[in-house]
Image: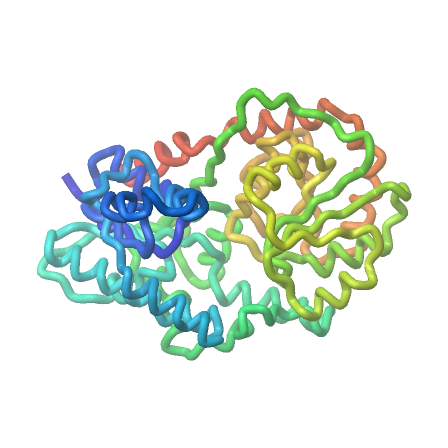
Length: 402
Protein backbone atom coordinates (compact mmCIF):
# COMPACT_ATOMS: atom_id res chain seq x y z
CA UNK A 1 0.00 0.00 0.00
CA UNK A 2 1.30 3.47 -0.89
CA UNK A 3 2.02 5.83 1.99
CA UNK A 4 2.48 9.58 1.89
CA UNK A 5 4.63 12.12 3.64
CA UNK A 6 2.57 15.26 4.32
CA UNK A 7 4.10 18.57 5.40
CA UNK A 8 2.98 22.10 6.21
CA UNK A 9 3.33 24.77 8.88
CA UNK A 10 0.50 25.79 11.19
CA UNK A 11 -2.98 24.34 11.54
CA UNK A 12 -3.65 24.40 7.81
CA UNK A 13 -7.21 23.29 6.94
CA UNK A 14 -7.73 21.96 10.46
CA UNK A 15 -5.27 19.12 9.68
CA UNK A 16 -7.86 17.51 7.40
CA UNK A 17 -5.40 16.27 4.74
CA UNK A 18 -3.11 14.30 7.09
CA UNK A 19 -6.26 13.07 8.86
CA UNK A 20 -7.71 11.85 5.56
CA UNK A 21 -4.49 9.94 4.89
CA UNK A 22 -4.32 8.54 8.43
CA UNK A 23 -7.91 7.29 8.30
CA UNK A 24 -7.08 5.16 5.27
CA UNK A 25 -3.72 3.97 6.61
CA UNK A 26 -1.92 6.09 3.99
CA UNK A 27 0.04 8.43 6.30
CA UNK A 28 3.74 7.65 6.64
CA UNK A 29 4.63 10.88 8.44
CA UNK A 30 3.13 14.31 9.04
CA UNK A 31 5.81 17.01 9.31
CA UNK A 32 4.75 20.30 10.90
CA UNK A 33 5.95 22.99 13.31
CA UNK A 34 4.19 23.11 16.71
CA UNK A 35 1.88 20.20 17.50
CA UNK A 36 0.42 18.77 20.72
CA UNK A 37 2.64 15.71 20.90
CA UNK A 38 2.31 13.60 24.11
CA UNK A 39 5.44 14.85 25.90
CA UNK A 40 4.42 18.47 25.35
CA UNK A 41 0.92 17.81 26.68
CA UNK A 42 2.43 16.34 29.85
CA UNK A 43 4.76 19.32 30.18
CA UNK A 44 1.99 21.94 30.12
CA UNK A 45 -0.57 19.91 32.10
CA UNK A 46 -0.07 22.09 35.18
CA UNK A 47 0.43 25.30 33.22
CA UNK A 48 -2.04 28.14 32.56
CA UNK A 49 -5.34 27.20 30.95
CA UNK A 50 -4.70 29.61 28.08
CA UNK A 51 -1.58 27.66 27.06
CA UNK A 52 -3.40 24.32 27.32
CA UNK A 53 -6.22 25.68 25.16
CA UNK A 54 -3.79 26.87 22.49
CA UNK A 55 -2.02 23.54 22.54
CA UNK A 56 -5.28 21.59 22.18
CA UNK A 57 -5.96 23.68 19.07
CA UNK A 58 -2.73 22.25 17.60
CA UNK A 59 -3.86 18.64 17.45
CA UNK A 60 -6.35 16.43 15.67
CA UNK A 61 -7.93 13.18 16.85
CA UNK A 62 -7.28 10.42 14.36
CA UNK A 63 -3.71 11.41 13.50
CA UNK A 64 -1.43 8.96 15.39
CA UNK A 65 1.10 10.83 17.53
CA UNK A 66 3.90 8.53 16.40
CA UNK A 67 3.28 9.69 12.83
CA UNK A 68 3.91 13.37 13.67
CA UNK A 69 7.29 15.08 13.50
CA UNK A 70 7.69 18.68 14.69
CA UNK A 71 10.42 20.98 13.39
CA UNK A 72 10.83 22.88 16.65
CA UNK A 73 13.97 24.67 15.51
CA UNK A 74 12.04 26.24 12.66
CA UNK A 75 9.35 27.39 15.09
CA UNK A 76 11.92 29.08 17.33
CA UNK A 77 13.63 30.73 14.36
CA UNK A 78 10.32 32.01 13.02
CA UNK A 79 9.45 33.73 16.31
CA UNK A 80 12.97 35.13 16.59
CA UNK A 81 12.70 36.69 13.13
CA UNK A 82 9.29 38.15 13.97
CA UNK A 83 10.70 39.66 17.19
CA UNK A 84 13.59 41.15 15.21
CA UNK A 85 11.15 42.89 12.87
CA UNK A 86 11.84 40.78 9.76
CA UNK A 87 9.14 40.85 7.08
CA UNK A 88 6.64 38.06 7.73
CA UNK A 89 6.27 37.06 4.08
CA UNK A 90 10.04 36.78 3.62
CA UNK A 91 10.37 34.79 6.86
CA UNK A 92 7.76 32.27 5.76
CA UNK A 93 9.28 31.91 2.30
CA UNK A 94 12.71 31.23 3.78
CA UNK A 95 11.57 28.79 6.46
CA UNK A 96 9.07 26.85 4.35
CA UNK A 97 12.04 25.17 2.65
CA UNK A 98 12.86 23.33 5.90
CA UNK A 99 9.56 21.44 5.76
CA UNK A 100 10.07 20.53 2.11
CA UNK A 101 13.60 19.25 2.69
CA UNK A 102 12.49 17.23 5.72
CA UNK A 103 9.73 15.68 3.59
CA UNK A 104 12.26 14.78 0.89
CA UNK A 105 14.56 13.07 3.38
CA UNK A 106 11.70 11.10 4.92
CA UNK A 107 10.29 10.01 1.55
CA UNK A 108 13.74 8.84 0.42
CA UNK A 109 14.29 6.92 3.66
CA UNK A 110 10.92 5.12 3.70
CA UNK A 111 10.38 5.06 -0.08
CA UNK A 112 7.11 6.92 0.43
CA UNK A 113 5.07 9.18 -1.82
CA UNK A 114 4.59 12.91 -1.26
CA UNK A 115 1.39 14.86 -0.49
CA UNK A 116 2.55 18.44 0.02
CA UNK A 117 1.01 21.89 0.18
CA UNK A 118 2.27 24.33 -2.43
CA UNK A 119 4.67 26.44 -0.26
CA UNK A 120 6.34 23.29 1.10
CA UNK A 121 6.80 21.20 -2.04
CA UNK A 122 9.55 22.62 -4.28
CA UNK A 123 12.63 21.06 -2.68
CA UNK A 124 10.88 17.72 -2.17
CA UNK A 125 9.42 17.57 -5.68
CA UNK A 126 12.74 18.43 -7.35
CA UNK A 127 14.95 16.16 -5.21
CA UNK A 128 16.49 12.90 -6.42
CA UNK A 129 15.22 9.63 -4.94
CA UNK A 130 16.20 5.96 -4.93
CA UNK A 131 12.57 5.28 -5.97
CA UNK A 132 9.95 7.13 -8.04
CA UNK A 133 7.60 8.79 -5.55
CA UNK A 134 4.13 9.91 -6.54
CA UNK A 135 3.98 13.69 -6.16
CA UNK A 136 0.62 15.07 -5.07
CA UNK A 137 0.26 18.83 -4.63
CA UNK A 138 -2.38 20.76 -2.69
CA UNK A 139 -2.52 24.17 -4.37
CA UNK A 140 -4.44 25.99 -1.68
CA UNK A 141 -3.85 29.50 -3.03
CA UNK A 142 -4.30 30.76 -6.61
CA UNK A 143 -1.23 30.85 -8.80
CA UNK A 144 0.96 33.89 -7.93
CA UNK A 145 1.02 35.19 -11.52
CA UNK A 146 -2.76 35.60 -11.53
CA UNK A 147 -2.74 37.15 -8.06
CA UNK A 148 0.00 39.59 -9.04
CA UNK A 149 -1.91 40.65 -12.17
CA UNK A 150 -5.23 41.14 -10.37
CA UNK A 151 -3.70 43.12 -7.50
CA UNK A 152 -1.64 45.27 -9.86
CA UNK A 153 -4.73 46.17 -11.89
CA UNK A 154 -6.61 47.06 -8.73
CA UNK A 155 -3.72 49.21 -7.50
CA UNK A 156 -4.06 51.36 -10.61
CA UNK A 157 -7.74 51.98 -9.80
CA UNK A 158 -7.16 52.39 -6.05
CA UNK A 159 -3.69 53.85 -5.36
CA UNK A 160 -2.54 53.41 -1.79
CA UNK A 161 -4.56 50.26 -1.14
CA UNK A 162 -1.65 47.86 -1.61
CA UNK A 163 -0.93 45.51 1.28
CA UNK A 164 1.86 46.75 3.55
CA UNK A 165 1.25 45.16 6.97
CA UNK A 166 3.33 42.10 6.06
CA UNK A 167 6.41 44.26 5.59
CA UNK A 168 6.89 42.92 2.07
CA UNK A 169 4.58 43.79 -0.79
CA UNK A 170 3.47 41.06 -3.12
CA UNK A 171 6.01 40.54 -5.86
CA UNK A 172 9.01 41.68 -3.79
CA UNK A 173 10.08 38.18 -2.74
CA UNK A 174 13.51 37.32 -4.24
CA UNK A 175 13.24 35.32 -7.47
CA UNK A 176 14.70 32.01 -6.18
CA UNK A 177 12.05 32.02 -3.45
CA UNK A 178 9.26 33.19 -5.74
CA UNK A 179 9.99 30.36 -8.16
CA UNK A 180 9.17 27.79 -5.50
CA UNK A 181 5.44 28.56 -5.59
CA UNK A 182 5.25 29.79 -9.16
CA UNK A 183 6.62 26.63 -10.80
CA UNK A 184 6.06 23.83 -8.30
CA UNK A 185 2.90 22.61 -10.07
CA UNK A 186 5.05 21.59 -13.04
CA UNK A 187 6.57 18.77 -10.96
CA UNK A 188 3.28 17.37 -9.61
CA UNK A 189 1.57 14.21 -10.85
CA UNK A 190 -1.78 15.21 -9.33
CA UNK A 191 -2.99 18.59 -8.08
CA UNK A 192 -5.80 19.27 -5.62
CA UNK A 193 -7.51 22.66 -5.48
CA UNK A 194 -10.19 23.80 -3.04
CA UNK A 195 -11.91 25.92 -5.70
CA UNK A 196 -12.50 26.09 -9.42
CA UNK A 197 -11.00 29.58 -9.33
CA UNK A 198 -7.68 28.22 -8.05
CA UNK A 199 -7.77 25.53 -10.73
CA UNK A 200 -8.40 28.21 -13.37
CA UNK A 201 -5.35 30.15 -12.16
CA UNK A 202 -3.17 27.07 -12.75
CA UNK A 203 -4.63 26.53 -16.19
CA UNK A 204 -3.87 30.16 -17.02
CA UNK A 205 -0.25 29.41 -16.04
CA UNK A 206 -0.17 26.47 -18.47
CA UNK A 207 -1.30 23.51 -16.37
CA UNK A 208 -3.28 20.75 -18.07
CA UNK A 209 -6.81 20.60 -16.67
CA UNK A 210 -6.66 16.80 -16.47
CA UNK A 211 -4.07 17.00 -13.66
CA UNK A 212 -6.35 19.03 -11.37
CA UNK A 213 -9.09 17.91 -9.00
CA UNK A 214 -11.39 20.40 -7.26
CA UNK A 215 -12.41 19.34 -3.75
CA UNK A 216 -14.13 22.18 -1.78
CA UNK A 217 -13.37 22.42 1.90
CA UNK A 218 -15.78 21.36 4.63
CA UNK A 219 -17.09 22.80 7.87
CA UNK A 220 -18.32 21.58 11.26
CA UNK A 221 -22.04 22.36 11.41
CA UNK A 222 -23.09 23.72 14.84
CA UNK A 223 -25.85 21.78 16.55
CA UNK A 224 -28.65 22.99 18.77
CA UNK A 225 -28.49 26.59 17.52
CA UNK A 226 -31.69 27.51 15.60
CA UNK A 227 -31.11 30.33 13.11
CA UNK A 228 -32.37 33.75 14.23
CA UNK A 229 -33.12 36.63 11.88
CA UNK A 230 -31.78 40.01 13.07
CA UNK A 231 -34.37 42.78 12.85
CA UNK A 232 -31.81 45.42 11.79
CA UNK A 233 -29.25 45.33 8.99
CA UNK A 234 -25.96 44.12 10.46
CA UNK A 235 -23.06 43.30 8.16
CA UNK A 236 -19.81 41.56 8.99
CA UNK A 237 -16.36 41.44 7.38
CA UNK A 238 -13.89 38.77 8.52
CA UNK A 239 -10.31 38.56 7.30
CA UNK A 240 -7.03 40.41 7.04
CA UNK A 241 -7.64 44.08 6.32
CA UNK A 242 -5.70 44.21 3.08
CA UNK A 243 -6.12 44.73 -0.62
CA UNK A 244 -6.57 41.05 -1.49
CA UNK A 245 -9.71 40.77 0.66
CA UNK A 246 -11.34 43.76 -1.03
CA UNK A 247 -11.91 45.65 2.22
CA UNK A 248 -11.31 49.01 0.51
CA UNK A 249 -14.05 48.20 -1.99
CA UNK A 250 -16.46 47.37 0.84
CA UNK A 251 -15.68 50.59 2.74
CA UNK A 252 -16.19 52.71 -0.38
CA UNK A 253 -19.48 50.94 -1.10
CA UNK A 254 -20.59 51.39 2.52
CA UNK A 255 -19.91 55.11 2.24
CA UNK A 256 -22.01 55.35 -0.93
CA UNK A 257 -24.91 53.07 0.00
CA UNK A 258 -28.31 54.41 1.04
CA UNK A 259 -28.94 52.25 4.08
CA UNK A 260 -31.21 52.48 7.13
CA UNK A 261 -29.71 54.76 9.82
CA UNK A 262 -29.43 51.81 12.22
CA UNK A 263 -27.25 49.80 9.81
CA UNK A 264 -23.85 48.76 11.11
CA UNK A 265 -20.69 47.17 9.68
CA UNK A 266 -18.38 45.19 11.96
CA UNK A 267 -14.84 44.43 10.80
CA UNK A 268 -12.98 41.51 12.36
CA UNK A 269 -9.34 42.11 11.39
CA UNK A 270 -6.24 41.28 13.40
CA UNK A 271 -4.17 43.40 11.00
CA UNK A 272 -5.22 46.14 8.63
CA UNK A 273 -3.33 47.93 5.88
CA UNK A 274 -2.35 51.49 6.70
CA UNK A 275 -3.89 52.87 3.50
CA UNK A 276 -7.18 51.09 4.14
CA UNK A 277 -7.16 52.17 7.80
CA UNK A 278 -7.22 55.80 6.61
CA UNK A 279 -10.31 54.96 4.54
CA UNK A 280 -11.88 53.30 7.58
CA UNK A 281 -11.39 56.46 9.64
CA UNK A 282 -13.78 58.43 7.38
CA UNK A 283 -16.39 55.68 6.99
CA UNK A 284 -19.46 56.01 9.26
CA UNK A 285 -21.17 53.29 11.30
CA UNK A 286 -18.20 50.92 11.21
CA UNK A 287 -16.69 49.12 14.19
CA UNK A 288 -13.22 47.51 14.07
CA UNK A 289 -12.48 44.52 16.30
CA UNK A 290 -8.92 43.22 16.25
CA UNK A 291 -8.93 40.39 18.79
CA UNK A 292 -12.01 38.19 18.63
CA UNK A 293 -12.25 34.68 20.09
CA UNK A 294 -13.78 31.87 18.06
CA UNK A 295 -16.84 31.84 20.33
CA UNK A 296 -17.34 35.57 19.86
CA UNK A 297 -16.89 35.21 16.10
CA UNK A 298 -19.55 32.50 16.05
CA UNK A 299 -21.93 34.87 17.86
CA UNK A 300 -21.19 37.59 15.32
CA UNK A 301 -22.02 35.22 12.45
CA UNK A 302 -25.29 34.29 14.13
CA UNK A 303 -26.29 37.91 14.85
CA UNK A 304 -25.32 39.41 11.47
CA UNK A 305 -27.59 39.81 8.46
CA UNK A 306 -24.80 39.31 5.95
CA UNK A 307 -21.11 38.43 5.76
CA UNK A 308 -19.45 40.68 3.17
CA UNK A 309 -15.91 39.72 2.12
CA UNK A 310 -15.54 40.80 -1.55
CA UNK A 311 -12.10 39.26 -2.14
CA UNK A 312 -10.10 40.00 -5.26
CA UNK A 313 -8.17 36.73 -4.96
CA UNK A 314 -9.05 33.84 -2.66
CA UNK A 315 -8.06 30.19 -2.78
CA UNK A 316 -11.38 29.28 -1.18
CA UNK A 317 -12.52 31.44 1.74
CA UNK A 318 -13.31 29.28 4.78
CA UNK A 319 -15.13 32.19 6.44
CA UNK A 320 -17.91 31.83 3.87
CA UNK A 321 -18.67 28.26 4.93
CA UNK A 322 -18.36 29.17 8.62
CA UNK A 323 -20.87 31.98 8.11
CA UNK A 324 -23.33 29.84 6.13
CA UNK A 325 -23.11 27.11 8.76
CA UNK A 326 -24.41 29.60 11.32
CA UNK A 327 -27.25 30.76 9.11
CA UNK A 328 -25.63 33.99 7.92
CA UNK A 329 -25.86 34.65 4.15
CA UNK A 330 -22.68 35.74 2.37
CA UNK A 331 -21.67 38.28 -0.27
CA UNK A 332 -18.44 37.73 -2.18
CA UNK A 333 -16.97 37.43 -5.65
CA UNK A 334 -16.44 34.60 -8.17
CA UNK A 335 -12.69 34.82 -7.43
CA UNK A 336 -13.27 32.56 -4.41
CA UNK A 337 -14.76 29.16 -3.67
CA UNK A 338 -18.31 30.54 -3.52
CA UNK A 339 -19.39 29.38 -7.02
CA UNK A 340 -18.47 25.84 -5.95
CA UNK A 341 -20.86 26.05 -2.99
CA UNK A 342 -24.10 27.33 -4.53
CA UNK A 343 -26.03 30.41 -5.66
CA UNK A 344 -28.59 32.96 -4.48
CA UNK A 345 -31.09 30.28 -3.55
CA UNK A 346 -28.48 29.14 -1.01
CA UNK A 347 -27.92 32.57 0.51
CA UNK A 348 -24.82 33.22 -1.62
CA UNK A 349 -24.65 36.57 -3.43
CA UNK A 350 -21.93 37.40 -5.95
CA UNK A 351 -20.57 40.70 -7.24
CA UNK A 352 -17.90 41.46 -9.82
CA UNK A 353 -14.46 41.71 -8.15
CA UNK A 354 -13.57 45.32 -7.45
CA UNK A 355 -16.93 46.70 -8.63
CA UNK A 356 -17.81 49.23 -5.92
CA UNK A 357 -21.08 50.24 -7.58
CA UNK A 358 -22.26 46.64 -7.68
CA UNK A 359 -21.36 46.11 -4.03
CA UNK A 360 -23.25 49.30 -3.17
CA UNK A 361 -26.37 48.15 -5.01
CA UNK A 362 -26.19 44.69 -3.43
CA UNK A 363 -25.88 46.18 0.07
CA UNK A 364 -28.94 48.34 -0.54
CA UNK A 365 -31.05 45.47 -1.85
CA UNK A 366 -29.95 43.07 0.91
CA UNK A 367 -30.73 45.74 3.54
CA UNK A 368 -34.33 45.54 2.34
CA UNK A 369 -34.61 41.75 2.01
CA UNK A 370 -32.52 40.20 4.79
CA UNK A 371 -33.70 41.65 8.13
CA UNK A 372 -36.25 39.29 9.79
CA UNK A 373 -35.83 36.88 6.82
CA UNK A 374 -35.58 33.50 8.54
CA UNK A 375 -36.00 31.55 5.30
CA UNK A 376 -32.72 32.69 3.75
CA UNK A 377 -30.88 31.82 6.96
CA UNK A 378 -32.28 28.30 6.91
CA UNK A 379 -31.24 27.81 3.27
CA UNK A 380 -27.74 29.15 4.08
CA UNK A 381 -27.38 26.60 6.85
CA UNK A 382 -28.71 23.83 4.58
CA UNK A 383 -26.10 24.79 1.97
CA UNK A 384 -23.26 24.47 4.51
CA UNK A 385 -24.56 21.07 5.62
CA UNK A 386 -23.69 19.69 2.18
CA UNK A 387 -19.98 20.42 2.77
CA UNK A 388 -18.74 18.50 5.80
CA UNK A 389 -15.13 17.69 6.68
CA UNK A 390 -15.76 13.91 6.48
CA UNK A 391 -17.08 14.42 2.95
CA UNK A 392 -13.99 16.47 2.07
CA UNK A 393 -11.71 13.68 3.30
CA UNK A 394 -13.69 11.02 1.45
CA UNK A 395 -13.51 12.94 -1.85
CA UNK A 396 -9.79 13.43 -1.35
CA UNK A 397 -9.16 9.72 -0.90
CA UNK A 398 -11.36 8.75 -3.84
CA UNK A 399 -9.45 11.14 -6.11
CA UNK A 400 -6.17 9.60 -4.93
CA UNK A 401 -7.40 6.16 -5.98
CA UNK A 402 -8.28 7.22 -9.53
